Image (cartoon, rainbow, N blue to C red; front, top):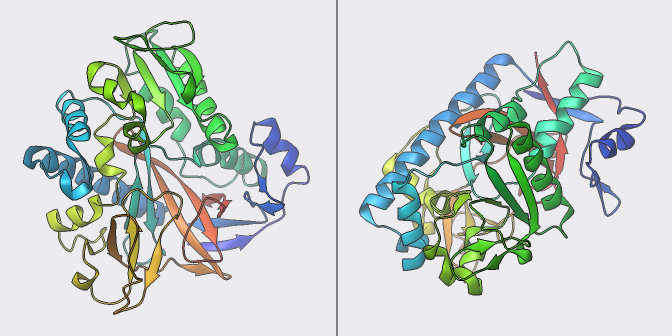
Length: 367
């Protein structure tokens, strides 16, 4: 695993924009970079794939244990959330996709930093943008990337010609691209689709409805469950049999409070890091993470003995596992899961050790 410089395509901006990828540059700074790329050996890709599949299986077992024991309070979930989680889990409502953020240097086992299991973005970049980059610059190489094909096949598990609604905050360019891309994969699977802004979803008294007052039977929502539960319409959530993507049981995995429970259930697992709700339980430097923090928000690295002061929101503590640094850039592996299988990776890098929504996306290949 190493970082390699290269020559960007002469018209790379236009090529990306022709795919619909308009935010390759943010506030004048590159978000997408192709003057560099990451190169893996085939056995390193195998390690990441195997670790992702192992971690996903552990996560599903953890969900089952939590539901059976009712340990919702430890994840900050109230009765309404718990009821939704339980119903979706016992009904075996299927999941669509997720992204695990891994610390991996090509030598030590990949370690789980967190599981973006509810509303992960950077999907289009990983599935489409870097694949077209590979076809243009390195046809003799390969890429761990079957994300698109896996999404289409996952949608095909629904009954034929289903009608799937998609909702996002369309004022966000990133969310709009992610949602529109998933609509495309759903259409390729033979289903009908309708796109809505989250605010356009209505309530008829018995069903959530679209702008044509038609009941919504299946809904992909790029909108976190914890935000939904804070909305006025949350009182209606238990009254509908609407099938959600992602299902409510994903609330357990998208919550960083799952990390201490994973460490409790599977202590010293090579793909996990020590984690606790008390920083004193962990030797050495720790990372304080809010339960529902997103895109690096609220994450603080603390040295041994440091407390970081009081936090305004509930947090967990995880042993600090430094990301590998290449040319002054901290590299994070985002490993994608569709259904229950690892299907590809996307690399993010930053000058800081904390990965944020502005951290650069860098393509990869392997030989």
